[in-house]
Image (cartoon, rainbow, N blue to C red; front, side):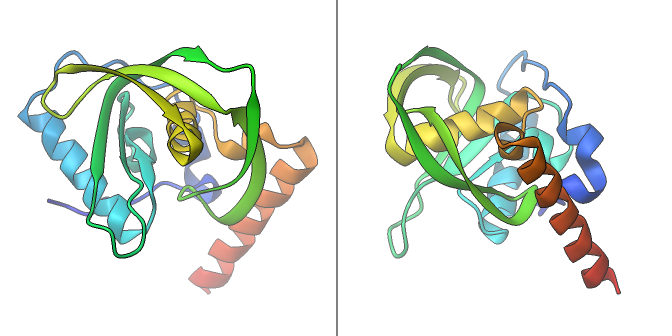
Length: 173
């Protein structure tokens, strides 16, 4: 497995804004990508990562919502799609590996039903709620070129990007 560089809004916004392409088949190359993404996500550390965040515009997501001392519980989502979303919404303070050190509240549907291909290529349909619903919707936004800060006001979004750029300049100095 290989650690990959996570793209950030400070230097890679144009790439992060790309819409990701569907995957034709789950094969060994794609599983290698997912394994690399998972290792990269754990190293960051984060709970979810879309392929576009490592510069690969494919509809692929990895996630692990295990807490603290719990055993790792990696999840893989290829070509995910939301089949249904509740009218009820819930706020959640989100952050993103591509928008480092920025957190803000985003309102999303509280529950969703999704369909995707798993690590083995088998189709899966399941319901998500709580942090799972938040995370899958956040990562699926990435597949459409949408960042969580795009759900904020223009002022908050511009401030977030400026803060990330300032931090990157300070780190480079």
